[in-house]
Length: 263
Image 1 (cartoon, helix red, strand yellow):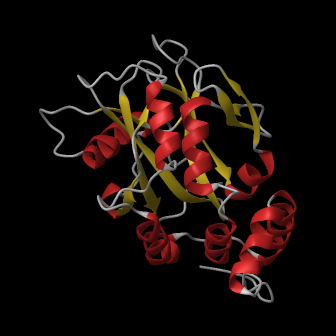
Image 2: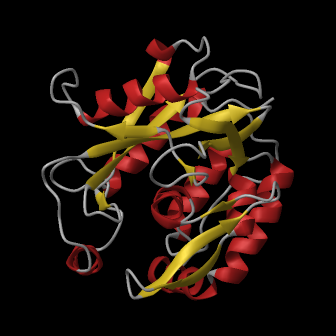
């Protein structure tokens, strides 16, 4: 069994290395972020937060998602991260809003006081222009399919996808909204991660343009067999980045693959 608990200090360090002066992890370079907001009228009357949970699901480092209920008025049946609107009356921060909404959606008896907030990423506009802030969290305890039953009025189901599958599954499609190709993750379970959820997934955990960061994360989250498979795939997809690293640093990215990585 692989746990993500002992990777928390390293993940926090990696996040802080990339954080801006406000200690926020930027999802996009400044020019790209500016262009994204230009395409969507901003609605500053409300704001929301989503929880991006890194978990150990049945022994595999994974991200946790929900499928929204078919009875919801917006985004029905879509894959999303748990989260919702920031309530000024009860939420002292976006982090609190993300945790509160996740508790309401996921249910279950998980010890929420042991969820570790690693940090938050820069907000991204919803389709209505509302700023949505991803809050990056690690669930220290292993979970399985029975841990979170989900609130029937809000979610159809709660499921996890391993980081390995996400790395393997990513493709892209044209977005009229952003006037660019955006990530899409067709999953083995028949579901599809797209839209804002796919963008957050890619740029926090699956950004192939930053191979060095990926290799550092992989040291802590993959077993040797998973690592060899994903490393080979990443190098094929990122040969330009890999060669650039070699030219600049005069060496190859170092990574331990001789022993099983357990946490």
